[in-house]
Length: 353
Image (cartoon, rainbow, N blue to C red; front, side, top):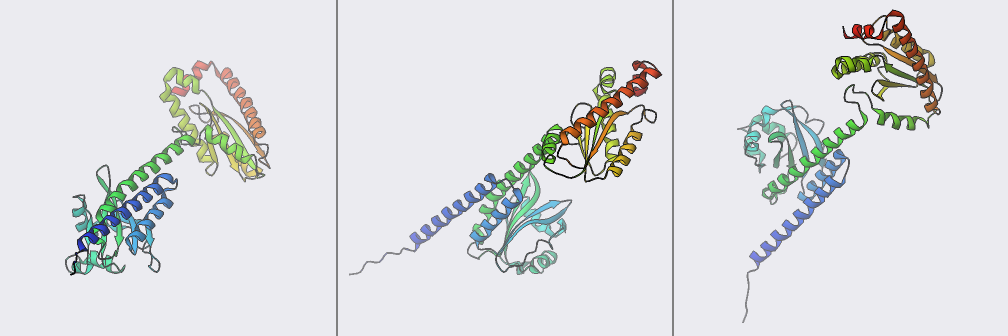
């Protein structure tokens, strides 16, 4: 007597469950990479590699949409597969017209056989066939409801292609969250080291750079500048007037010192670091800066200026102090001119006019 049981259904359920668990494990590893890492570009490359290996695909990639053109920003290729990243740049959005209609429904595009589109979509077919693509799955990436790109997988095995969509949609969600975090961190980093009014570096960056330069032996020219009449302008005409004065001063400084590092270290105080500059060249630029701020040439925006050059940055704090002292001497001369020409009140009226 023999008894037989058909185990096919149970084996299929077992394999399906294993696939689900393996998929969940892979997705969790991708999420871990995205949220524990601090280099977005490298983290995305790792995630694409994880996805490509798990799905046994030939290529995985992310395209970004800019100015109605798609460009391949990130790519992973299996061993022996040729990269297409450099080629796939600035592709007109019109080629993906059929894809967009699918993306609008927030669905993944699944192409089981690219040959099926040879006649109906010749441009799309040509773009895919020259890359050696015979099947693919693509998931849209949206930011605030607007399409910003897509995540794709080329040539996954036939038995996996219909199970790819939900995986890609999940990863798109976390990739976009990681992208937003990277953008926010970049903005915060920028704000922590930049003055929002003038776009110059701020005092935090000034202190950090000064500490770094103290260990170097390169020549440096330092300018210490104080905008004249800022307090009076703020008190009499409002801070909007004072802000315009500061912006005008910053523009003059950048016109002269185009390659230098410029800092706003206080309300009306600025510092310029000119690295690897000869003393002669530095003096030429200082002369040009003083002419730009000269009281006789521009009574609306002028400043007291002190400058110092040295062959080595090692005593940079002392060099900054010397430039600062020269600036105060120049400031005294400014007030002497005001007294000679009339009251400070009259001078302020000229600044306002």
